[in-house]
Amino acid sequence: AYGLWNENYLPAGEMIENTSTNRIRSHNPGLEETGWVYSNVNVDWTPSNIEIAPDGITKCPKITDTTSNSRHSIAHTTTSAQTSGSWNSWSFWIKSEGTNRIHLELGNQGSIYSAVGMTFDTAVTDPNTGIVTGLIGSTFKDSLVVEHPNGWYHVRFNTIASSNASTYYYFALKDDAGAISYTGDGSKGIWLWGVQLEFGRYWPSSLITTTENEITRASDQFDDPTAVRYEDMARVEKR
Image 1 (tube, one colour):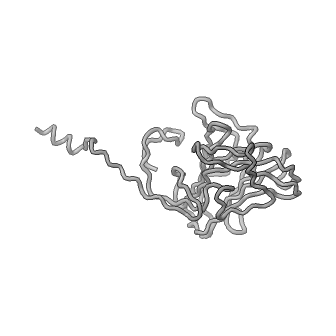
Image 2 (spheres, rainbow, N blue to C red):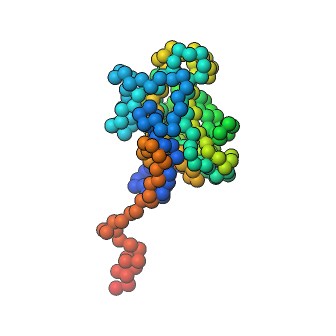
Image 3 (tube, rainbow, N blue to C red):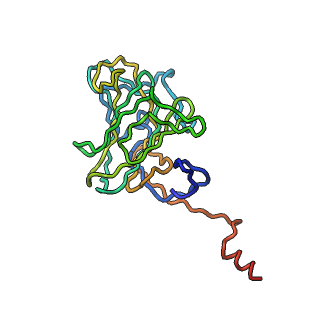
């Protein structure tokens, strides 16, 4: 993205972004479900388990474990293929309840090229910047986590594609001991919103909302009729 950024890769002014495509066909898992596969989890729309997304509008259901002794997961595989050796940028908002540990996995069909643990009870937020350390592992090339109000975390990171193939997000709940396969109690869970994957980008752009298909956002165009161009200033100075 073009624009003003500070040393922590956070927007510090107006942003003018290039075109980009969100390869996740529904950025709201549990609400619009296109492309998402659920395994031993429930989508809980009980009023007490609905949270408002960081946009301040969208209602998000809680994705909870079941009482099965198994993995409890949610996954999305892209329909488009990445390009081996190119950058991929990933971003999402997440909130947890009843579980302090999440397994996050990225990869191709049938193989993993990056996996990392998310541990909420070791997360530490800088009160001045909102930047969080200790939440996500260091497997990725670069990563940034920022705490948002009401327990939400915005997670951003990048990877280098390992093949010319489709790729996937995979979130799995863990029990208190960190086991990825466990007997659930029906209450541990997470809320997810704004899930995004962009091929060929070093760093995530702002959210591109999707409901059923990949969506491409056109390049931003900046037009300020009151702006003074450098060549105009040069003409004035010559008079």
